Amino acid sequence: MRALLLAASVVVCAAFVQPAPVDKPILWPAADLKWVDNPAVKGAQQAVLWGDPARGAYGALKRIPAGTSLAMHSHTNETRALLVSGTLSFSFEGAPAKDLGPQSYISVPGGMRHAATCKPGTDCVYFETSNGAYDVKLQ
Image (cartoon, helix red, strand yellow):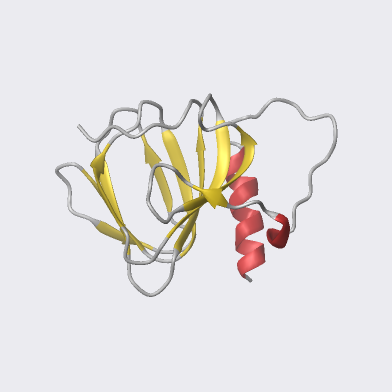
């Protein structure tokens, strides 16, 4: 079931940002994904599926350890995410937090301040896509 949800997440979110055309098909079983440390969040990891988050448009799976809180921040570019596992308490500045479970969707306009906490118990894994480079602005 988890693999089905992951596959559905990637297919649904792929429509949000169109990567450059590829000349060969790609098929990655979950066990073959290359998870690397995410420099923006201590303990977090990411598996980039296309593009380059440091330079421009991308699609990536991201994993945040259970119990991790991300302080109020914003990004230059719009980001969209689909939660695959875990429970994420998410809020936009000035609004109450909402607990989001698997298959929940988030769209954050560039410049919109927001915060998130991965609830204890299970790491939060989500698919994220953006039409521009990833950054974090704490002010």
